[in-house]
Image (tube, rainbow, N blue to C red; front, side, top):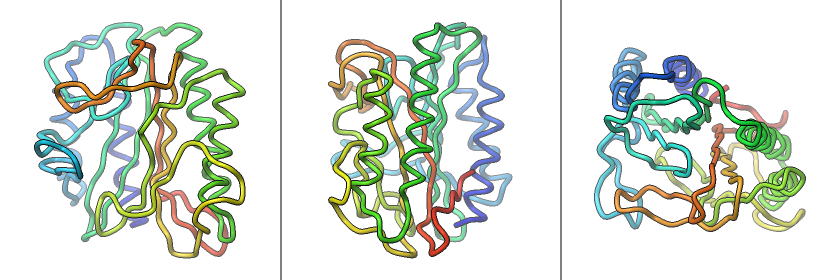
Length: 240
């Protein structure tokens, strides 16, 4: 998984660099497909049907714009200055799944958008710091929640992290809020996807017709994610 994570991180860096004004999100999806195959891996999202979904996902990349939090589908949309784009990507390497996400601002973005991106990224760092043996899932959620409150951000409702390994989505559910000391204890060898998803407005989300999730109030959203292993020496970021 560590080698698969290294390859995913490299692909995601290329995509983030390629996301700029004038580029169609479908072009980013094609690039993701090409780079994953070139790396010797397979796309994890393409044709994947998560629990509760009406149909399988038809793209390699999730490209979620502005108020769309996650699962946005690439399209002919041309990126414009000021857009906030979430790039969520997974791959399968030697039978193991890896999952990671970054949020990028296109051109110059507003100060509130910059605050949102920084807060969400800081929350990921805070959550990962709690991913140690003997700690709990509540410790991770509590750390993420504290960062949201400090920065006056909403935590996107109903959207969580997850266990990951032979399957893309495994137990346990990794919430972006919680109480210290509560929830499942973290054990050595567990691998989880930690993924704070914050909003500039209220927390409420809704599922759109394409099965993506967006903020109900239309406020901007951000998403950062790493696949993290729990080891005796502390958290190990596999997708860094």
